Amino acid sequence: MGTLWASLKADVALVRSRRDLHGLLPYLFPHVFAVACYRVAHALGRRGLTIPARLLQIIGLLLTGAELDWRADLGPGLFLEHPHGVEVGDGVVTGSNVVLGLGVLLGATFHRPEKTGFPVIGSNVEIWAKASVLGPVHVGDGAVVGAHALVLHDVPPGAVARGVPARAYLDGRPLP
Image (cartoon, rainbow, N blue to C red; front, side, top):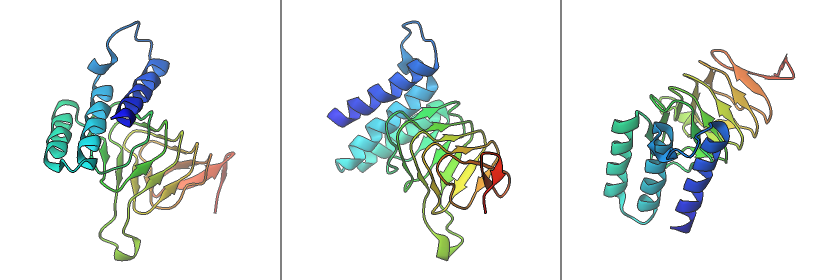
């Protein structure tokens, strides 16, 4: 239970650093509530209580519009800019301080057997509105995925990925 509370504190601390809440209860904000539901569901699921974990995941989805699968491994400091439409698949792994925008999809590509797998997202990564990161893709630390990007290939640390399909840019120059 100690890691659950530590993760929740990190999530709320990130919200406080990004928003001036003036002492309001941050757990009333939908993005914090969605992440809190995920954290509790993840803790329950790891203890073998998969049905309550799934029910809590569904409650979070119904109340916030964000579907954060309890089996995903999401690091501390997760921030959902706008939780509605955010979907995170069961095998996704993220580092700390990841920002997800409206309608972000992190999931697998099962229609391509040779490329089956889930994304691994580094720390301090920003993924903006309606972007999709699909398959066994690695997004490096400090990378940014632009709005509406479709990421199907690895993004190096510190790079910016944009376009459909996304290309990675570092210092304004396209990477091969």
